Image (cartoon, rainbow, N blue to C red; front, side):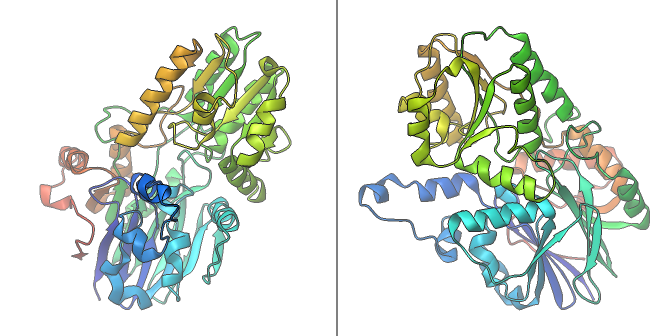
Length: 447
């Protein structure tokens, strides 16, 4: 029997990550993510809003908009899919599950405990139900989905808790799916990657490595999250902010980062308030999965209707640290509303800290430029890029290839020009050009 790999989404593009692996009569889907830029463009259509129309959120409409993986490419294989395995709880890997999972009636949904809890919170929030069974696993675990196919989760580090690299074991060999990852040897929450198990898998033989190569152009190793903690410590504790408000914005799913911000806020003897609906989703999931209980350390303002009321009555903002959504200046998120809708009255030399980088898509860049310009007019102090990435750089890619020793490398989660850089790296390590397959969505390979 042959091993087949079918890219469904995320190949030669950034977003809607999804891959199908088939062996014999059995198949597994690895990730079902959103293409965030396309999803936002589709759901925030101004012309439709002006007409008072709601977007069609059917699977077919979202596929047509390029917002979710196009599973029509694998229509004939849908009955063979025995499992949907999710690597981690970011929307570009998980976000299409509520829209597409019901199309796979024979497939359970597998993920780590935190990933499954985030999915459950999403479904509750959106009032959506799935027929598929949920299976929550430890970060390091192995389970069979058919006679000839088993799945293994291997503990990995990223910018969200309980990320797993997924190994698909078959008699024809192992497919290693390593999206997303960084090799963090000093994480501030959770353990470092399971190097021992990765080495063991590499020694036994990996047929194919499918790898996150978003930052293949960065000639370095990704800094540890412990570096981000020191950067935040330097800004929050090392800058005189007495008498002024502090507003921090970061990724709602980044529980380790939130934990650091909250602890530093408490050291400043400030009330820490998380403001924004998405914080509630991820913080609740972290508590239920046993990752961290942030709820006992903070106040939370969850819903949009509460935000205006809260800011209208908040006393002594100079004694508060507000953690808000809107790090990419997304329309409707809290920070842009604070600035443009005047939800909050900024004073000169209030502090706004962006514990993030700008995700390099046109809408984000444009929105952030506009937001930053408005903040400057208000004469607030702006601290940008107080952040380290959750994605591997070139030297991490080198380490992963050396650990797993794959026969074939398939770079993904990046535009074509960055995928080509991974081919260059592989050739440095002794691979031939044809050993690195640069694929597009729908382009099948059989091994």
